[in-house]
Image 1 (tube, one colour):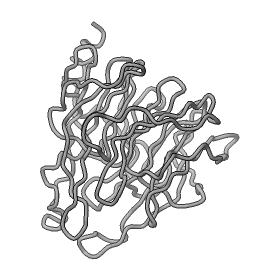
Image 2 (image 1 turned 180 degrees about the horizontal axis):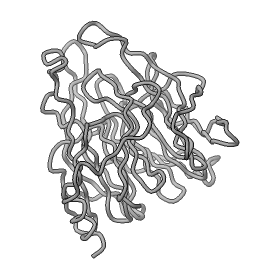
Image 3 (image 1 turned 120 degrees about the horizontal axis):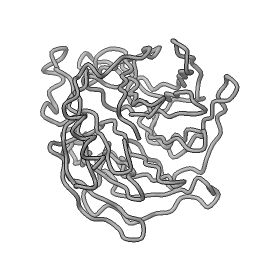
Image 4 (image 1 turned 135 degrees about the vertical axis):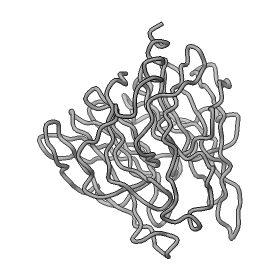
Length: 335
């Protein structure tokens, strides 16, 4: 009954429940985030020097932005090299940043970042079996799972990988792939002992050798030892949305790209209305969807992080090719 009551509370909450934290020092997209020793860490990212429809080029960045509890401005460091479109989990007071990409393409390395005594410590963990970018991470117990990602220029992976962070020397293991389309930028989260996957985009060859997206709505549950089973599909397509588990049976998806304006960025330019502001709430116990409080702005290719009893969404892409440094926060979503 608690999950049902929570869903009702979320469905009637007002958009004013969202608040702003101190903005990031720079507007970013493709960054990831986590928590270490109480500090909020935002890692990597990218931006454009000018809009891509005006001939702008993407810049790949290497920042580590840290917000310490009680402070009103971010501290900034370097992770030692550019990285964007990775995924991350927080485990054992460290943030694990998995894969991602640079200007040269996808990478396989994994960073372990810990905030200690006012400074970051950056080490490495076992690298992925192969380079991946635009994939998704989930943590269940000590197990770090990685799903999907861009496998080639015009194809997405359906793979599921796992690394036990309590004994990382054992390395990565390949598990049963999702029995559906390979995908980039899906929603992927652990609820209890199960993993849930929703949406993302299938990649297909498009014009001039560029990948074309098929926006997905399907839902899947993975139970270790039992495999995959389909669950309730999304009410609409969702790609690149931040998400967070808010209880052992409930998760929230914040906005995302629904594909309705796919390919129209150059036509709309500054008139592009941005991405979805709808919050979708999934109750695994009922296998059902409802809506939560609307976002003040839709931010994609970013993370949703539980920090100080709130959900935080730090920066992201607010319309195609345009980044934001805005940091959204909402209380009341309690894990």
